[in-house]
Length: 465
Image 1 (tube, rainbow, N blue to C red):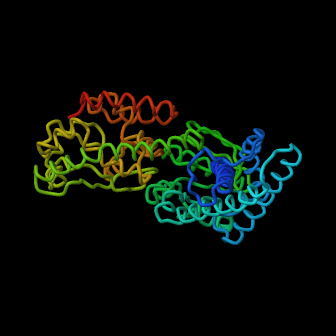
Image 2: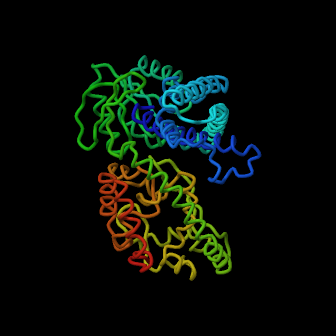
Image 3: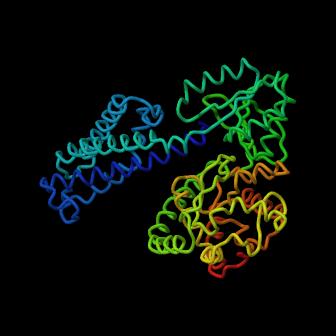
């Protein structure tokens, strides 16, 4: 894991832990005043004595607790460490913080019952250990592992890739998965492009001697066209599209050549917006979706949902969900309508498609057939905003490899194409340019603007067929 990613993760945990220690202090005060927990949720019996300066101790806990944990090596320990190690580090940290509170009460002459500090020590340890157990269960779930594990191809000489694989296995056994290796001295560059397509990786890690600089540069350019990150264990190389950043990869300096947005707080807020936004929309739309499901079922024989393999992040296939708007044999009839395709490039679009059912035409006009994709957003396969996901077979027919760069971010429910008249954009190259413009200029503010502009476009049915 790169240092930037590790730093963001650590800051998130520090914020969570600071809040837990503050909550522990409040609970300790409440428990001391109401042992029977009858007024646990009340604020009238806070039990912190008469001295108003006790609140200063409460505020000091917020920044001090994570600092103590960091000094004890709590955030640098591996996620797979034993429960005994976690408990021992937490016990030491809670004792140190409790001792610091006792010293502070003497130094500042704060009137507070000493039993509160004892309660605080037990409660803080319990809450922190509970949090770690929850995180351990979540991170070990199949869904979390599939979403968090990053997939790579190792590129270099056979000796270098062997050493790199051994190092990654020792330092990052769960976060990184090596799917293949490529020997620069024996394998032609065309094979790398095929491997990028076959394995749907998140990136390529290059570790080559100076005698292979030409080949390494070809690898970087191939990754640029594909929209795949290239991690070069080196300190130079010129690029045409990628933004270059220097980072640390387990103590080894690397330059990251990336065309997609890098890890940042904005990216984290985007993930939160996706999850909670999809959750809220599903809660609000549960009843209408039930009505739509009944209408689809009654309008024509067949399943309620349409499922299809679409290309997700870096081309990784996933099953998209939509309300079925066509007859059940739509895929078989597609070949008969190929001559009527109105979209240039690999995408298939037909006005007044005869395969569309009566209720399906209305669902498409209002874009309500897309609502089930909120489940794809919850699963982490899609985002609220991003390039629209294309079927796997259409992606394979890209005649320009640069078009694959639109796969360098998660696909979304809406995008710049969606608010630009949707099907009125009949040229696939223009569609791709809008997607690449979104990727190159992405910000959280841009996502919010696209979401805001999507609502009136969908309500008006602008450009929908």
